[in-house]
Image: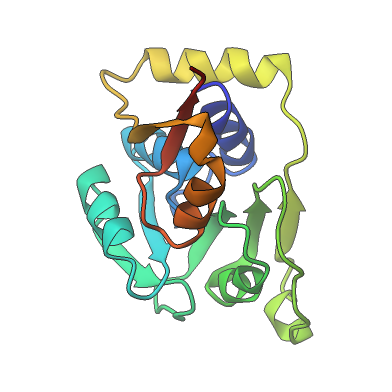
Length: 185
């Protein structure tokens, strides 16, 4: 909750006045913020990697009814989107799915390079913003919001710290639940 939740909230805070929101990546932050957005009656559209069965199952479990592949262009335009996945290519696709005047928030600590794209995808007063740090106020506001929600389900698995390299690879390949916790023996 403190890491994924508060960072996710900071990203969500920039667009919480929007009603149709795309979520790219249902990892630690994405699956927490999705539950908050749904509780605030936002229409969520999830974008997952191709062949990501766990991601699709999670989206359905969270109550997200519209699920597309990350590289799909959809008919319903987003008012905003949050990119939690550290994949620079997603910026172009998110912009292509965004209505004029909409915002894309990049919420990752790191991201692969963003490839070049045609200006027409940014044109129309679309914007891209990144999240760098959280503040004490972000944490306070996050906990105020979640205190009004009856239940937030955190999907996590616990591993030994000596498994960290294998676990990082498994995360990259979408083989695990969204959040992992390492225990120190």
